[in-house]
Amino acid sequence: MTSADGAFVAFERVQKSYDGINLVVKDLNLSMPKGEFLTMLGPSGSGKTTCLMMLAGFETATHGDILLDGVSINNIPPHKRGIGMVFQNYALFPHMSVAENLSFPLEVRKIGKSEREEKVKRALDMVQMGSFAGRRPAQLSGGQQQRIALARALVFEPELVLMDEPLGALDKQLRETLQFEITNLAHELGITTVYVTHDQTEALTMSDRVAVFDDGRIQQLAPPDELYEKPENSFVAQFIGENNTLEGVVEQIKGNTCIVKLDSGDIIDAVPVNVSAVGDRTKVSIRPERVEFNRERLHDDAHTLKAEVLEFIYMGDIFRTRLRVAGTDEFIIKTRNAPDQQRLTPGDMIEIGWLAEDCRALDA
Image (tube, rainbow, N blue to C red; front, side):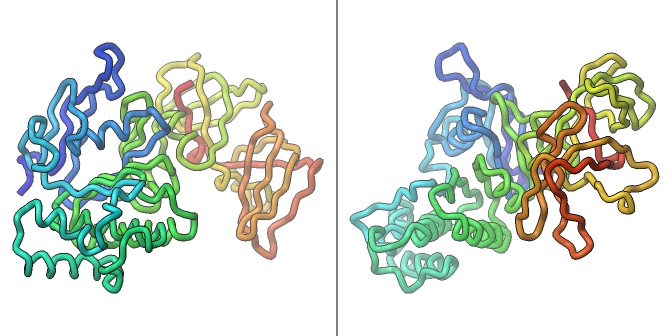
């Protein structure tokens, strides 16, 4: 059962201050339906972890309401919220076996021995760790310990699981494996999940929606593809994936297009996202993979600019080229490694282009 507006988890006008003066979370309004996997993404100090800790009950909101299933949980202690938690440092009891670690939250809930044993076995099987029940945490690898921490969070079958940078201490290959395991498990079990990370790739890979935090506010809340393809401001455009930024002034706005005069003097068209008037300063955003340099690949209506090749890097599946264009030496294009794709050399002069619909005029 969710509340009338369909939200299973809701933050309503939530603020948090540690000193009574500075707000680390500012008027947060956020709602989640049951079963959603939502990631809070942002740089250090952006407020994402504080929001997770308030939801868990380890921090208290200075103002506003946090609701779970339509009921305010502001004054409910953490151990009575029925929420599973997974931390980066695993937080396993070193003196207990794996099975005892999983059994502990069930004992706290006064569940009988036979039912405890059944639930522990089921949880360990979920994370493919059934044969490790008798081991101590120190006898496990980092990846195995994280699987056990996940199983412990799931063992009492919570409807909501919170994860705070759970894969941050693992190597890249293991991290990527566990990303898919966690996402698949959450969806299979229908668990509502709030996941905190500063890793943008992790957020895009795992989430149904991503809330991008900066300066205590959500800058944009959207599915991963929308965040990447349609950033609403320059912070999101720069923080999510690689991005090219050209600065200029809005010269004309007409419907879904605006004309921008770049500081270099070049004139381009863009989609006006959050520019409001002629004369506004703007940062124009273009993703590296939306830029073409082969004349035969350019559409007739593509914008073209002259560019000088500064660096050409072979990366296996793609080529990454850094250019000097329109007054910047940090313009990046990414092209697929294909048999017909031209390889460039530093010093080459080329013409690059893109479609106006792939170019977004954002706040300055």
